[in-house]
Length: 96
Image (cartoon, rainbow, N blue to C red; front, side):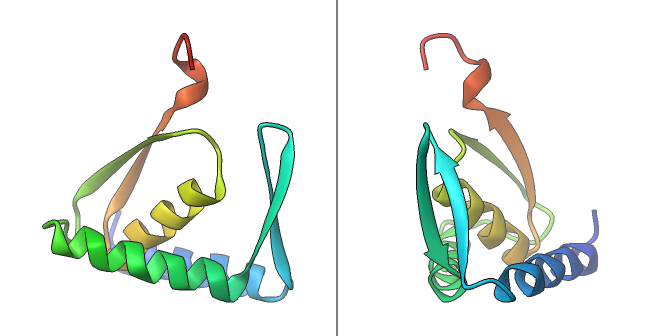
């Protein structure tokens, strides 16, 4: 996946959610919401931390986490720096 594709995907996603006031996420049966501005601010902070830890364009970042707002934030952050996300489902792990 090319960096320009990641940026185009990020732009499409953010334009789609920007038209809504709040993004609704359901985690473990509990509905949570976050504004577009909050989501993007958190993604920018995480992107900066990824860069500080040595992540760069074309790296693959594995996310092992349940479905959550944090999962979306890390995904957006990875796309922001040009990395690729490898999602590892916590639902397929016994005992979690």
